[in-house]
Image 1: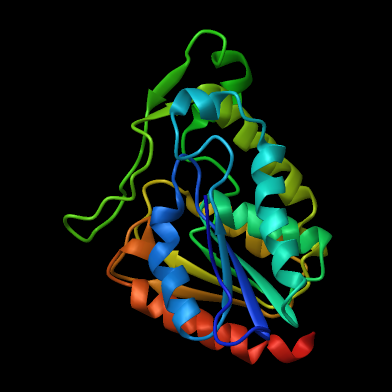
Image 2: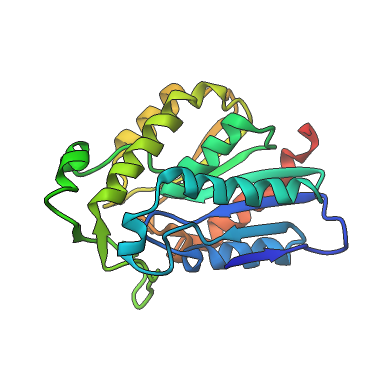
Length: 245
C-alpha cells in the first residue's frame, strides 16, 4: 500500500518521499501528502513492512526492511523528478535522515524525529523481548480532540530492539547529512524526548538547520492543530531549496 501522486503534469520537477512513524501507518501523513500533491509535488508515502497489519507482524520485521521500503519510494521518485526531498514523522524522521546519508537528496523535513528513547527500558529490549512480547502503546499523542492515527494498540518489544538498531545506525552517519534540514518540534511531546533533538543538532553535518516550534500540537503534529503550519512551511522549504540540485 503506497500513496503516490505525480503532481501536475507528466514530469514533476519536485518530489517528496514521506515516511510514517513506528507502529503507525500512512494515515498520520495522508493530510501532508494530499497537501503537497495539491501544490504540484510528486509524492510517495509507502506503508512500511510490518505496519498496517498486526503488532505480531511488526515483531518479526527487521529495521532494514523499513528502510528499504522508504529508500525504494525515494529512488522511484528520482526517476521522474529533478529534485527529491525526504520527510518523516518520528521514526520516519530517522528513515528520512538515513536516506539523506546515502543518497543525494535535495533536503530533509522532519516532524518530531526519533533518534533516542523516552523509556529507559528500551536499552534492555534485546533481552526483554525474550520474556515480554509486547507493552501498551503510546499512540494518539494528539492534542486535537477526536483524531486518531490508527496505530497499533500494543508495541512489540522485539521491534523496539530493531528500532534501537535503526537509531544507532542513523546517528552514526548524521555527519553525512549536509543538505538543508528543517525540523518541526512540538513544545509538548510525550513520545520522543528532547534528547533526540539534542543529538540531531549536535551530530548533523548540515549548516542550514532550522527548527520550527509547534506550540499547539503533541507528537503526531501532522494530524494536530499545527498541521497547516507544517504543510505550508515545508512546501515553501522544498521550493526554496530545489535549485541546489
